[in-house]
Amino acid sequence: QVQLVESGGGLVQAGGSLRLSCAAFVRTFSNYAMGWFRHAPGKYREFVAAISWSGTKYADSVKGRFTISRDNAKNTVYLQMNSLKPEDTAVYYCAANRYAYSGATDRVDEYGYWGQGTQVTVSS
Image 1 (tube, helix red, strand yellow):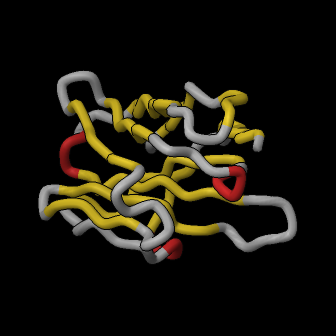
Image 2 (cartoon, rainbow, N blue to C red; image 1 turned 180 degrees about the vertical axis):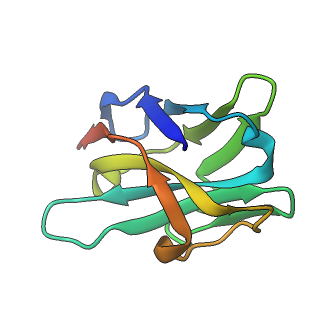
């Protein structure tokens, strides 16, 4: 079983930065691909970024602005968000792939474990 707890959301002005953290309570964290998704009102849940042993993957809308990283010693994955825009406003969710040793993927159906979400609001 995997438990995920996000933190770091908040209110920021356009152009600002935030760093989200996701603490994973799992025995073999390093074996799992991790992802960030977001859900804005009136929209579908959207892939943001993923990281695994094979590398990283980003949505086109965040490339060059967001960076995903992980610290396996701390069982934590991060999402550094720079140059934030009002359209980045959403609830951000951390997710763990349901299968160990999977690659970084944007397929939501491959993620079997989800955090409770953290609100990010970007004002114009």
